[in-house]
Length: 183
Image (cartoon, rainbow, N blue to C red; front, side, top):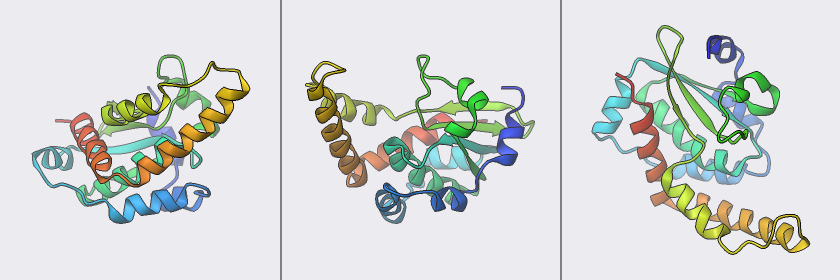
């Protein structure tokens, strides 16, 4: 994307984003407070990347509740600047980073020192996709009353899994480091 710097410059700081959290604040804070960054060779490669990060997210998104606190902690420990652009306020930005034609979040864009996109991560780590697929495997047909109830229950189950699984947090961290480390 040509004008990624414009979006970065007007994006929220991590503290400003955290102030917008409501329903998912408890889970976000739990993950942020309890996750420990693994300082391995992937961490070193990430830390030594000459980048800053722009996240496309929303405070109401369960996948953001899982991924963003891990990324905030990782970026802090690596000394990498990070900002958050709200998806619903920035149509042009999210439309440049669609997933299979959909506005799925979070998306993380690594921006190099020439203000160009260097790497993109998201919307979820492989382990998260496996968990989500397992939870959603027996869903009723979309558009039915049964589907709506089952979907609500599945979201609740995923949210609980996301905020109570250090192994998942570690898997997310590893995927973030490996994808966003830029030479």
